[in-house]
Length: 156
Image 1: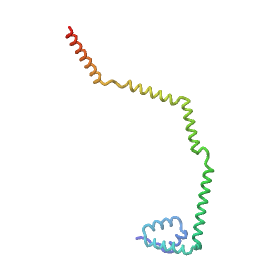
Image 2 (image 1 turned 90 degrees about the vertical axis):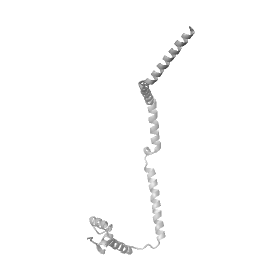
Image 3 (image 1 turned 90 degrees about the horizontal axis):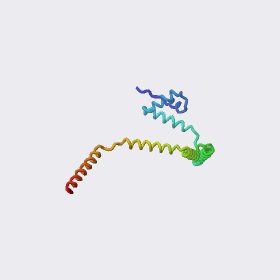
Image 4 (image 1 turned 45 degrees about the vertical axis):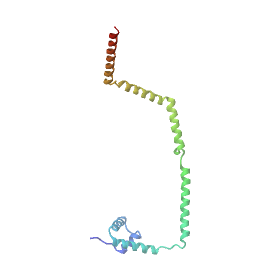
């Protein structure tokens, strides 16, 4: 059986007068109980009625928007000022170019090329000629010798 909470209890929840464990229980209960959800909405509406009203809503909204804009401008200025030089992309490109020049002058890339050439030569020498190719060559040589011996017989 589901336990329902009173409207006074929901008012304590809205005014933030409950302990954290009780708040969690009430929040979990709202997911499953429509009757308590209606009581909670009524409690929020009652709390809203006790809040002071805004006389000029447009001016209030413009003041808030101006404050947000000023805060954003201040953050952008602070972000530009606080960023150290070593975090700029030009610094990273300069380091990459310097390392490339150092490695090139030390011959690092040339040694890699020589090493790959020796590996390629070793792979080429390991490759054997197919046996069928040798057999075909021997057959043609034998046929050529056979044709040559018949020609000599005709000449005699």
